[in-house]
Image (cartoon, rainbow, N blue to C red; front, side, top):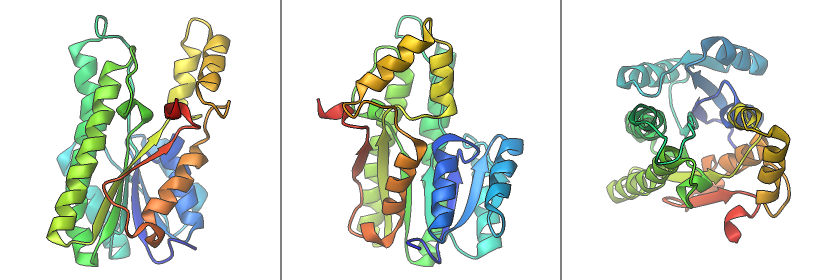
Length: 252
């Protein structure tokens, strides 16, 4: 029960890493608000957890939607201790084939959405005497990928936004910590789609598995477990840092 008494708002919680975080946090005693643009799948995910956990519809690119989601969280539970900014998208295409529209869409969700989330939770976290913000970046925010310029740039933005937020909160004495998580390929619907749409899906899967020295694709729960640490008081002296969960990919 490492998160007992705490309340978390998790975006992208209908599937993938966000959903795994919701399940893991609930098992650790946290009351969880699952947020996602996909209402049907999000409500089903919340129903799996049962009461007191709940679902809110949230398009992370919309400032008013963030205000409503945070207000609903505080209304339901009286506080907000943890934010996991897990909503994200990736669109392929190298610098010659990527479009301005796809660039803007990826940044709207991954960069703007994380910025809006960080800003939206400061007031309720300050009222609680502190909190933990966990921003989902990627190994693509640390190293480049020739076929993902928009994704790499957006996740790099998340990495440095995290440090700015952490320093501001520390300087003001708010007790709010902010850290970034950097997974590599993880078995999620987004990665499944990427493999399925490859010219040779079997070859693509084997390449992804070989990319990690540990020899496998990560599991969403691998990342959720790391998120529990950053959300808990065990990491009370950790802020502005990067926690890499990549099976050794960036060690080479």
